[in-house]
Length: 426
Image 1: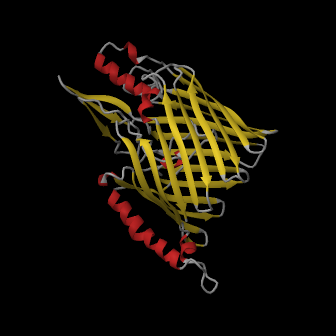
Image 2: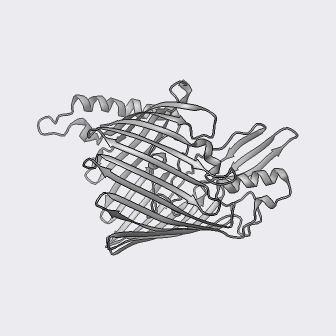
Image 3: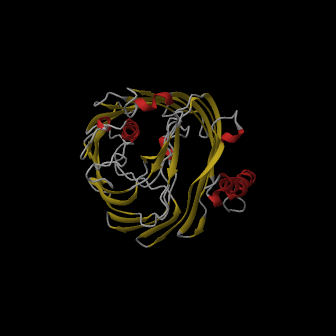
């Protein structure tokens, strides 16, 4: 969605509703206010980041953003959901202003059938923040936001869910493809292009889920394009190299489960991904791989929550890119393997998240981290959130990436940053 269209949506449609909602905030003659009728909500955000998330050399980024959401009811059993944002991630540059329409879908219920049509966020997986089965919704990993969920951008999809007792069968059709936005370092003499698939109508997914029982679980299957790019060599000259980001088809079989055992919450999630390189002989296409997350959490002393997970990844028919003889092919294949986390045949790691609340749960502190035992690279995110009032919230924190350059988190070392944000919600 181009910025102009997003601006028309936010400023021309939703922004006037903000003014009306403020003017008519109180119900009149027993009727709901305009804001209530529109299901209008949003936030104004201002913040500071010491570094970008683009692997660039810039420092000190003041930013401002407007997030808006409207969910008016069209009929008794039908509604529209519209959500988007406009932001400037560097207030010293006018051309840094951008916008996105995160969701815009029609939702209705017909007895046991729920139907959604349009741009919508579809998040699958029961593990804590690391989800092998979450393959439908792209993220913008360069966005300067304190919450990872704000990185999501809903794909255009038709989703139908049929409920039968404690079971739900969901089918998803995705006629359009949008990939992840990932940080890539710009190297002199290297040009990075992108080739997004055009024939994307044959993307689909299905999921069978059980909830409300002693064990909640789901089985899923996805057939579509990989959100993470493969790196292909497009052209080589004496002084330059053109690299092309390409997105190949994958098939993913996944499962997850969650249960409560006494004072412990336990969860597991796993997926096997088939790629277009089943034999592992094409260094410019990912190999098939298995990804497992297994862990649990417990709350101590009423307000201290500890969440620990084990991470395991196995790359089928692994071929180290370091063994390639051609130096150009070796360099490109190595960078792809790092981005795709396929540098090693086996990867073992762990994630830890510890959180605590104070002052009647208005102040929350959290430290989250991921460590890979294979290369000892890691990321740590300390964060402190204070709800000043029901509408005002302040957040301070940091992202700290460490490890050797030839590792998943070490590659992102220059994206280490401190941040602060003040948010007014309405």
